[in-house]
Figure: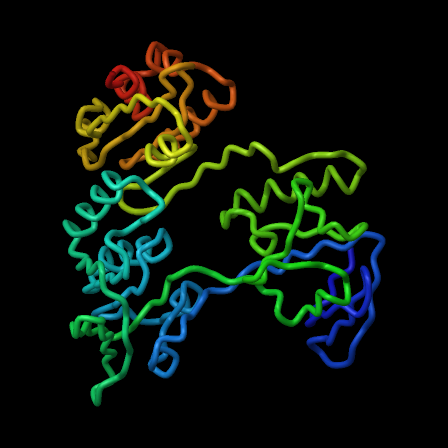
Length: 351
């Protein structure tokens, strides 16, 4: 493999001109071309935000000091992970979102449980108001002004409202590659752009923005470049929001399942009911499962609690194997482990 460091732009199908980091340029042409340029944090056009030196999930990691106070704009997984982290470090943290609650992609009861957990950790949560402007005062502190006139003060401001694709400078039109209105590359289920021998993978291809999904995209491309026909269709993608404790989910939420027309049964279990949680004194959280009443198949679970990301894999495996929920309800699981809670969770299904 030859690694060429520089900025590339297409000049024709499967052909790029690279402005080299060390000067000069090169033209490269491949029998196959894969576009995998990823995404960057999105910084919205809020008055004063850029001038106030707002941080993103990239630049926050380069801080060489601990802010006494931090304002987080955005209530998704990334913003909440950093809010939880810096509260644990000792910063005073405020989170603001324009919608009615945090984590809008989760069921309301799960989002409420996460909000209670963050509030108990000292995070101040503001919902239902958008950010009108941001400015620095004479002492260098940032004032995040909300639409109702509330001012959230912080040494630093973190913007965590999503990411946008790195495609603007690629001159994709010269390659015949099409994008969505927001700049993500259009691909089919095989990660082909529709242009012969031209592919895209990872975040820039609109894949769910998780490292483990990019890994699977790689596996699919590796096979397809060798003449196989692997697909992204029907992928069961888990994800974990690394709070303390974690929120892990796979499959549908209850809201999604009902909207899709399923007749569902729902189970909830407080983590405090799991013996292992009591022995380790990690009793915060709630587990929730959604099951199709007709087929007894698991449609999805959300696990908020210690070791949730690890436990989730057991449920995901059962879903991939098309097992009924009773397989987990009745399975003999080592005592005491957090996975043993799956016996209790699926025994708690409501009619």
